[in-house]
Amino acid sequence: MSKLYIVPTPIGNLKDLTFRAIEVLKEVDLILAEDTRTSGKLLKHFDIGTHMQSHHMHNEHRTIDSLVHKLKSGIAIALISDAGTPAISDPGFLLTRACIENNIEVECLPGATAFVPALVNSGLPNDKFVFEGFLPFKKGRQTRLKFLADETRTMIFYESPHKLIKTLTNFCEYFGEDRQVSVSRELTKLYEETIRGSAKGVLEHYTTKPPKGEIVIVVGGKTTK
Image 1: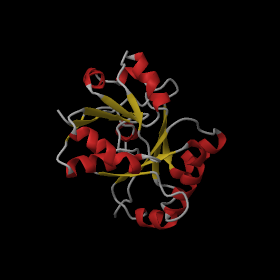
Image 2: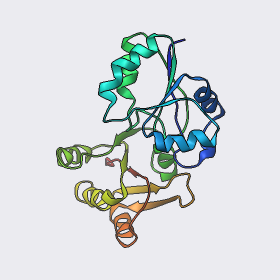
Image 3: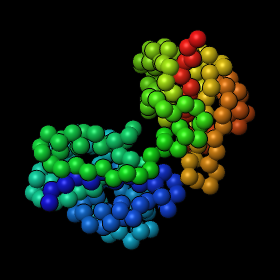
Image 4: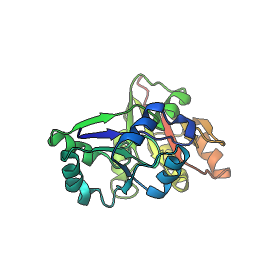
């Protein structure tokens, strides 16, 4: 039966791959992987021998039509990313949309995604929140930060370690030095940590202790008097 499975993979700890995810990855006809070298280690660990094909941000526009054709022929395909849930700041949206437009069934399995544990760990309000992903690096960054300065809901950002200082500095400038911030890095891994405090305090911490690993920043919304 033609079907696209969206399969979350562990963000660090391999034990977080679900039994159902392993079953699907073994039974589908093809696995689309963001980086076949990275995913190859995961598949080998769980003795999954399904054929893989590269599917990433640099080629997804060119391969959509051929993948839809394959799915229409009656095969089942699983889409995975290097870590976490595909289409969340990773490739996946374009293929999912194309499948829906072509009446191909899409099923997303529940599983790991970095921003959920970071949000819960932060201690900041999580009844309402906005996921911003990566901020624009240059063009549009200032405009976005000015817009978000008045956001009252908790905000979630992804960031790379070498850009964290710049981003925290921006938060101090646009949101205020006292705005509450929580930085989680290396979630589910050996050196997992979460640093909480004011934007200024967290910036000072990472200025003296340069960060490593994958990073999620959770920022409290603007308080209304």
